Image (cartoon, rainbow, N blue to C red; front, side):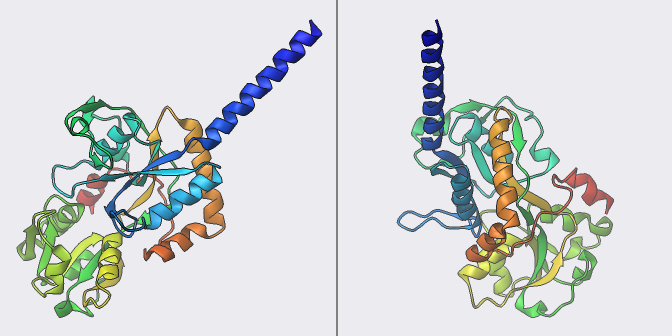
Length: 309
């Protein structure tokens, strides 16, 4: 009997060891947007790059697993939903984590619909583009970067001091329809800026290029988007003002709520990397104006806060 128990114990240990070894060999699959510089960039024939790509590699190393990035394409238009796209990718098993996710209350609520289509992703088939995926519930990691909105000025307005949105009065403003910046500018001081605003169609208009050409004087966009433009146009005449709109969102990872152990492991890795200054270093390498996460970790009702300002 003793020999049998010993043999069974040895067998259990071997099975456990094999399971751990298998987990270590199992790639950590992280979904990243293929065209969101300087956060993440993937172009055929060129090395993958970006802040989130560097961070993903570091997270995988901390977890002792190889990294497998599932690249996907998120459309910049009024009909796109980053929340549903991320949920569909996770729920379909395309990845275990989605990086660069804006941590807001409305982006983490239980989806109002049961299914959604997948965004276009590397390796997608015609059938993948047609089918709908049953959605799950999302769970966030701790944040790892703060993503504010900033005022960007064209050449004719260079040097203009901006300490508040009201300082944009009298300038020719351009904004993409349906964007957060659109809501902020249109609602400011009960429509005080409306007469100076021109709306552009997302994905069809070159907002920063128009600003560069002097067609408009200013806009309000995500700071990372300006970083990307500056990297592609090092001699640009458009500038930021150092002003950040006070309502901004942290970014982090998001997983399915059914994977709490993975989220815990990722949080531990993020804590270690932040303490060592590695996350800020990745931002510098990628050309990102890195700002550490701010409280609250998860932004509340964005629209309510905009209306109340």
